[in-house]
Amino acid sequence: MALDEELARLADLRRDGALTSAEFALAKERLLGGGQTVDYAFLAYQAVTATRRRSARVAAAVAVLFAVMSLWGLARQADLRRQAAAVEDAALVEALGVRIPDPRPDIERLELRVRATAYGAVAVVAALPAAAAALLWLLLRPPTPPSGPAPTGAPPPPGAPPPTTFEG
Image (cartoon, rainbow, N blue to C red; front, side, top):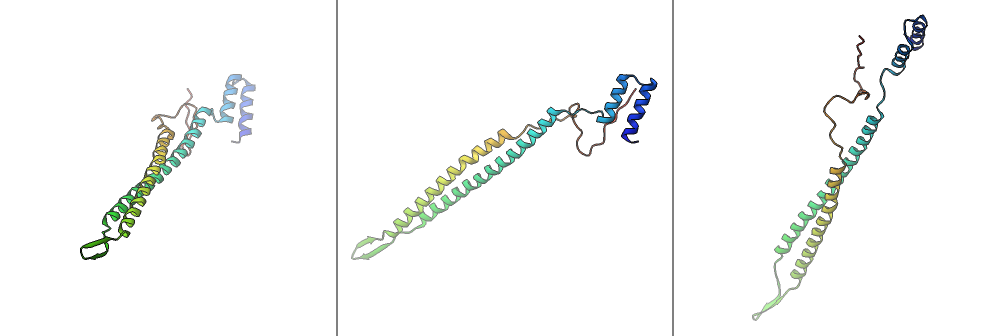
């Protein structure tokens, strides 16, 4: 039956005295509004929760990115220190019991140690935003939803069958 036909039938029942004014108003509200009220607080909670979830995902991605950068800096630092330790000393001249050392291996070792220190600093500097982003993720992630029936008046989830009402 069409909506206008249902409303006309309800009006006829009220005019004939089969329905009181209160019963007519209730039936009309159910017919027009589906008998459900919208819980705006619950809808606002869902919107805020969705926003917080998105923000928490971004913070987690930033934390992972900076943590990877920090680990890369630490690995590079360790590699450069190994390279510096592997540089062998050399001599420019070794004759008549006199040895003149070559300064190039010392310079190379110093360069590798400086680079290792720079990568270590990158690791520390990248670890700070990683820790801050991880903390932000912990603060932003919304609480787990309650494990029970939805609050009264909340709209049913998409695809759920309409609620059935039993009248006595």
